[in-house]
Image (cartoon, rainbow, N blue to C red; front, side, top):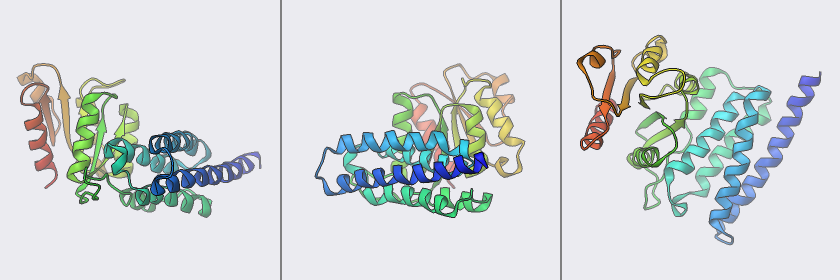
Length: 248
């Protein structure tokens, strides 16, 4: 009974928070306020929803909120953030709250795959070419790569650690994964091997980014569908080559 009451309280409080987000979106669309402040407030509220969703039995709500954060990060300049896109995320969370239940696996996958991709610098929505999962620490490299992928039309999901990456990969079934070799708890190559263990992610292509020299031993240790890419003068070319092949 106590858990049911707490769950209902979460639903009600989250709907109140979403009303605040809608107010910020409306101000953003009308241009009547400080757009940077509107975005920051949306990020703050959505981050709190993301953190609470899984704790109350709504992991998909957390993933949708995570998707909104990724949308804002990969869209780039505030001028290209579209209010109608943000409302799709809000409405998806609202639909789950109204149902009062966590969606089943297939419905959750459909909901997450249907979320908006980023916008081009012109403000036009990029063509939806599929989804990419990135495991990288915050920094310039992550920002550049994720925004470039969004510009190309990929829905980009960004996580900071391998454990969360496995969960996201199983939920989203991305077209490809880009990870750094250095991760907490396991290496990028070990993560690629873990993804090989699951039927639904066995064919996912993985690019492992490394600062080390690529030895024959390292190449021999790679699982199927995995590419090792070294940081350096040819990094961008090799990464784009991987993306073109993975996107086919």
